[in-house]
Image (cartoon, rainbow, N blue to C red):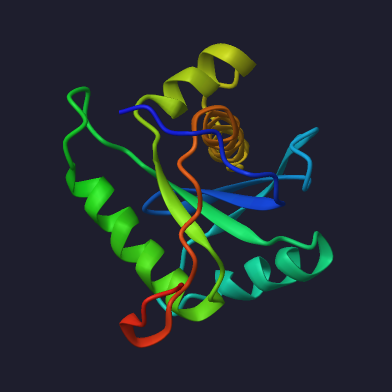
Length: 153
């Protein structure tokens, strides 16, 4: 499925894993894409405070979350987990957001940046960078946050 390139805005990208979440962001004109330190994923969602700091400090106006679909574009168990996590994040942060197919982004990060046996989370953040670069190139546009299923006009 081909999307229209999204309109420029500063966006935070999340590569959601079971233990860590890689982070990257872009400036409002899509000139630079940079990684941020990965955060540890916690049951009580402590990482949201880090997201809020980045949103404030970097003037973030949207979020994208990678979905690890299989090679045929079908949902996987991990993709379902990422989607559920995204819904929670969306309900708390209330920013425009969308999901991007991140099939093989970790493999691409390892091959592109030569990082192996990483325990720090840098590979997760480079994966978030690849997801963000893919989104900038292909879209889709972010969906506006809607409260209580209201229709946004």
